[in-house]
Image (cartoon, rainbow, N blue to C red; front, side, top):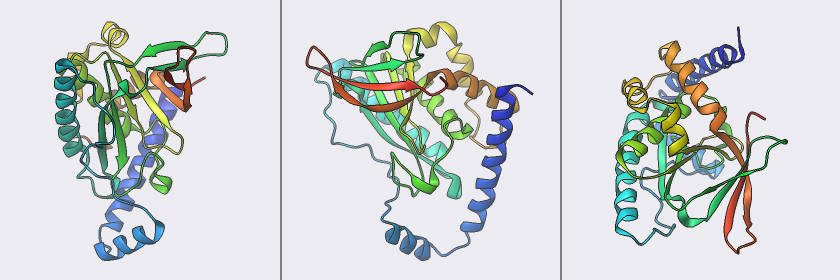
Length: 245
């Protein structure tokens, strides 16, 4: 059994346990859940995108963001209705609020600076959790369903808009991002075939080949954000390091 097989087996068991727990929790009165959430200081994941981030003032950027909002809503509707284990896509915003992403892939390599002007940022959060740090509702960085949702957002954004970058925040204990560049992704992945593979109803007990494909595509593109710093030119860059190094 190789490393990917071990990851798939571990995450499959975790998904099944979460579904079983969700079925048990669904029998508890909603008012009790609401009281418990209030006591913990949590707020439910919301569907509507944040309006606190600035948008880029060009017709192309506006059209791209409008499309991203539609993609967010449609993917949210596909992943949300899964009882306690459901996921919400809570954000669709331009990455251009900062100037770039500085990605450290390995100690022996220089960091790669990825311009963020023409990109889209999405956030995935467990239903009823508060993100980007969902606490007890957090998932593993290689949990299947969040990665599947993140790749679905990525593929649709590249196929349906001119965005050259997609960044997706995952519901993990640390600030983990899926960072995907259009040119690199389209050169290495058959996105039409991937979209077809992701078209079925999302579920934990997915075909093993799909689970393997999702994990293998996502893992090299997962980064842990460490903060936003000023560049020598006076701009802002988000620094992140590869999760698998």
